[in-house]
Amino acid sequence: MILFFLIPVNMIFGLLPPKSLLTKFHFSMYSKLSQAIQTGNLQLYEEVLANYERVLINRNLYLTVISLKILVQRSLLKSILSVFGGAQIPFRVIHVGLNLQNQHLSDEELCSLLSLLKYKGYLKGYVAYPQRVLVVSKNLPFPPVASLFK
Image (cartoon, rainbow, N blue to C red):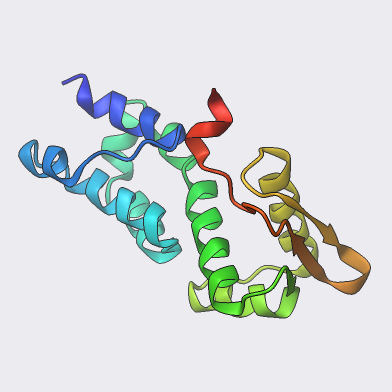
């Protein structure tokens, strides 16, 4: 079925499928992935990857689904920003949010992740590494993913 391949590709472009479509075709895997992307739930993402690894490998979709992790991380960072408020987020605050999702990163790894988000256009701002702070744009720090591919 072509939908099985189109859905994860659309997810990469920020186009999450409607729940009605996922329910109709019994795509519980994509339903969970969509939920993980929307909520920034890295544990759910890792669970889906572990539970459906064999299916994804057999259908040559494993690498595609792995590339969705950055969208989950982006959503988590977006949630952290909305809770913390302000345009400057100390690394320690981001670490707390990541630790709640069982993601333990060093400052260097966090800086690398934030730089990747910035490079790909998922985040507007910069990393002040000596101060261990992420400074985000006050206007639309997280542009819509779909707008990055137009």
